[in-house]
Amino acid sequence: MRILLSTLKNSNNEGYTLENEHFFEMKQEQINQMLEEKGYIDEKISPDLKLRKEINRLRKEKNAVILSHFYVESDLQDIADYVGDSLGLAQAAAETNADMIVFVGVHFMAETAKIINPYKKVILPDLKAGCSLAESAPAEEFAEFKEKYPDHKVITYVNATAALKTMSDIVCTSANAKKIVESFPEDEKLIFAPDKNLGNYINSVTGRNMVLWNGACMVHEKYSVEKIISLMTQYPEAEFIAHPECEKPVLLLAKHIGSTTSLLKYVESSRASKFIVATESGILHQMKKTCPDKIFIPAPSIDSTCGCNDCTFMKLNSLQKLYICMKYEQPEITLAPDVIEKARIPIQRMLEISK
Ligand code: 13P
Ligand code: SF4
Image (cartoon, rainbow, N blue to C red; front, side):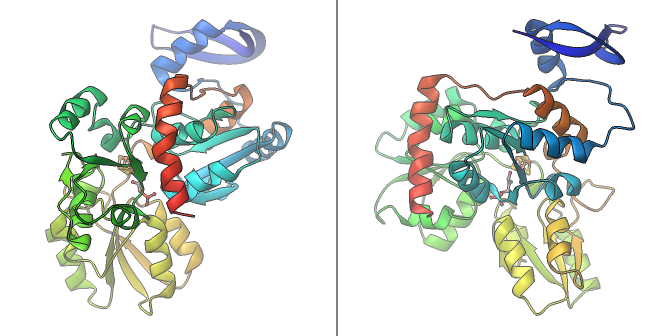
């Protein structure tokens, strides 16, 4: 395949710069190389280009739907057809009539959308938008781990690779994890992967004793208990709320624990006017939109200087990359048919139970 791109220059072996208005044909192999190196097509955009207008034009022309997670930058949330948590986004992907799904989030989320929609094109602005939690469970190591527990069923948190999902009985998200675990008989032996913090939390609220894979999210495991306590002392009227991917000592301080959607609903319904929020700071945009009169303070991490915890993977997405990926319909998520077939079963089970 060959597509038209602006003039390509390979400068100082530092990658490619597309730098003027001339067009020439670039081979798909070159594009693949660029995608491998950078994760996106690095095209120089005119500063006069109205990105939002162009994205809206492409969305219409290509019958595309833009799905954004709560953790991406505010402008990418505001341009989406649907913005939500992992469960809401999977449900939106399952229901869409669009020909093309543009996933503004991270790789495992786009993979999930592809598994649900094998015949649709699924693209994401930057292929390198991964997830530390998904990476913490390599498929081969997990297969060996699973072999040690032959009589256990596997519940996989959606923040996992497609390969891991092929080895799972059911998938869950933070919004439905309790419900999914409780859908199994009380005496069923269960493995929960890859997030040990969510697994621990669900064990504590259900009284189960699931075997946990030792994975964690690099954002949620970094909250500082000392700094949170100090903020709570400074603002005694504020309520502290947290995502269940946080570690136990952090969760023990929380007034409310839940998925991003659950946290959002909580701040809407609570009578408090100030909140300390322990999850990725992107959610604060929706909280401020929904409750403009309330104050939201991002919980501090052990090593942040900005006072908040950003997911560097989510933050790889930008309006410019969104525009370019819609223009060239790349990078595209592709998966082997047998992976789609096997990974689809546990995802469909989750969607059925979560209806
Ligand atoms: P939810 O979208 O389920 O709240 O999970 C947060 C998360 O870490 C997504 O990567
Ligand atoms: Fe993965 Fe954590 Fe980023 Fe969510 S916040 S995408 S779990 S690294």
